[in-house]
Length: 263
Length: 263
DNA sequence: TCGTGTGAATAAATTCACAGCA
DNA sequence: TGCTGTGAATTTATTCACACGA
Image 1 (cartoon, helix red, strand yellow):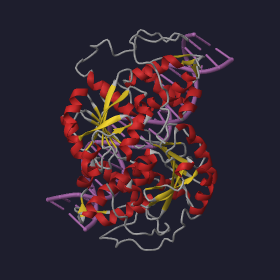
Image 2 (cartoon, chains in turn red, brown, green, blue):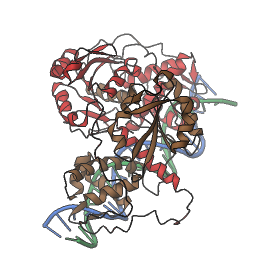
Image 3 (tube, chains in turn cyan, blue, orange, purple):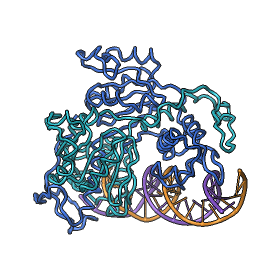
Image 4 (cartoon, rainbow over the protein chains, first blue to last red):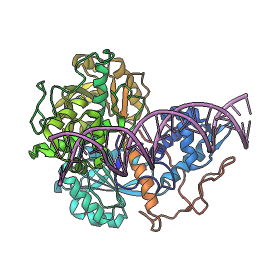
């Protein structure tokens, strides 16, 4: 899961738990779909199923927002859509800049989900001079040199970083210095930011690694109890400083940090 | 995060908490960077800083893996890299297929982080016949018709869905039927899968919405972004709606009900 | 009657703080 | 002496289960 970091999570948020905030967009999406089909009301059970959570959790989540349902009936779809949108701050316009227009940046620029939910791609920025002026998703790419001016002129407070890992921190620093206070980071790097700035990251390879972990466990399912001998560390005593490389050949620890993001 | 856990993958995880598993890739990345710089050992404090977590949490996380450190000294970088890699199942090769080769799919195919960590892009699949044969990231795109055959031939157990929302469930069903048991979903849809199949999702717009929520709170006094006027009253407060927590003083929201979720 | 709203009970995750070993 | 490893305390999240209102 992409997760944010730094900053005081809840407590600040008028009491709404972080875990709940993270699910509101999910409910909103499900509700929007219902709204399109002109469904007037939904029960917590139905909505929960559509959002992929259980109903008790959903009701508890909604209880933090207020009592927006009707006992014996359910929730009014339109009304709930509005309430959640407002709670998430989506009833206002959020100009966003995307820095790093490679494949990923282009994908983000084209992603309909942005434009349709209070987010407006105010500008696309890239360090490659040859890209300047070239339109991506109908928006001309601007050069990094103008980053500060773009941020100011558009009153941007949310920035998306889709640059290679090596450029991320630098871009981040400039964004923050220019006034951006929320950053969505796609580069595989830990960004350090001053207090008051929120960073959330989306990391493609991390998600895969988590899947691999579970996948690995499925493979060794059968063995009940202490069956296999492959469960514990190889005969590798954590003795002090010894480049111990347990058995197995294992493909060398090549690469390292996912070097680069498409750019 | 972007993350979303569906289901209960845990319980099978030999006692390692999900939250810990989710951080292991983070530690691994930081350790790999240290390894490249030939740093022999690190303290929990240093490594924690590099990974963006606090040291107590890191030590607790590592304690679930075993006692791999040396009191008074720290952790042997190489050894820890190996242990975590093994724990995550990265010492083996995981063939992966990416379905849906649009901008996002292409970005994923080009993403260095995949190839460098035990993941191998075994095939790229797209429904558009005109893309067939066309190479992306050096790999020829294959047509959806051959999906099942490709999965089987390559022994693929992890699939990445980067298709439009409308096609996601269908693709998912086929992947699962063909033997895939772990899915990374980039489409903005809740996938339903049978027990035993893990799904993780990465949702670009959800992350932005979470940021907007916090951003909105920061704007305690100043007007954010456009500083748009908040006027237009919400849709009719349906039935009985009791504004519980929502104090009246709450800044009157504006805008109307957000429209639609694109594909 | 039906389904929300919510206290109470559980479970999970985080943080504290310090004993103990290199 | 310095830093790990970990019980205990604390905080956060989830689930239960049922009273209550439409």
